[in-house]
Length: 475
Image 1 (cartoon, helix red, strand yellow):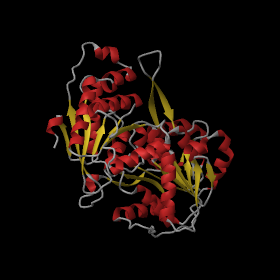
Image 2 (cartoon, helix red, strand yellow):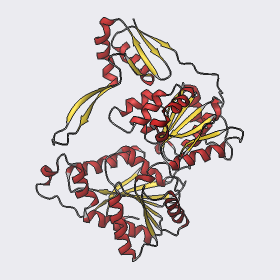
Image 3 (cartoon, one colour):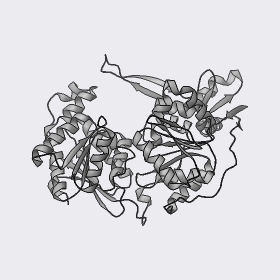
Image 4 (cartoon, helix red, strand yellow):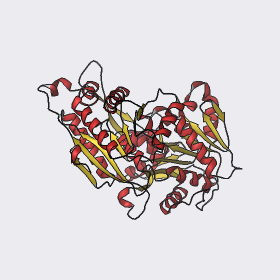
């Protein structure tokens, strides 16, 4: 007989010693993966096996218990579960919030959280994930609550939203940005909790928590996030993201292990008749781009060189980006341009300055800017003083800019998480016709494969209008 002992954070496999190898072989089928490792001194990658079940302690992240239970049963083992998780008494009704009326799907999501006790909400930006999580906190009526996020903007935004949505007598604390103020509900920056000098009081906070909330939960597999989540003893665990399982490696397993699987998901294609999001049309812009002889072999394995050559420094591509921006400006659309690299943003900013004969109507913002300067630029964009805003990845997540009419995705790449998050920057106004521009990169087979991957991502979101276009054909 095999027994899975499940606690709030970790689970353990209890069995006879002679069965260890056979059981681990079965468990590894669903809890291990092969990781690609790049060597700076070789163009050929190597591979290594990664395991989430400890070989010595037979320990695993508790969120994987159901997955392990099923695979052992399928392999013919007799399995029992000894669940040591203690869920305190909690509310069962969906709580309302101050200042807003929850939409039907938001109430359904909160109800799913109350029923399941842990798991992830998968909803696009603009669909009110934060309100779902706050309502869930209010519904459960269990304290203390620890909420994890990763930027100062999101820390401040989330803290303000809690204060706005919940009664004033409920204490809302904040940890981050030079502040350490613990309350029954505390919004925390991961970086602050992860600092060595804060280890003792961070551990005390996490081990005393009854509810753990993770904003932008797709970051959980990162080292600091995962460590904090696994040090937390909270039985209730929830996360939200537009792309919680957007990776195709072991990151998905780590996320499920630490928080739980997706318990509520809603795509645009499932929202017929619900006026919440803008209606996007995605135009892949074809531009003059010839393959250079012999480049395929030269570029193999050197992604940074290829990215500069085929994306950030590609004159034809940057001219196409400029042409798209010019068309959007002439059509009176507030245009947000998103890049992956700061240098690319500077190049486009310079090109736009030359075209517009000045820089007073557009601006480039990046992470090294002072927070006040970034906020001022965003407000100028919202008010219409700036007709175009170029941004580094600092606006990829969490920032609400519903005024966007046109989104120019200039950075390329193949990341599903980035693609979905960036589309979400312009989806936050119901009934609006949103133009989204991407670029069909044909100068190298890797870049073309990435373009095709992005096209599949947009289709998977339920976006019906995805087409290859010339700038002149967009209307």
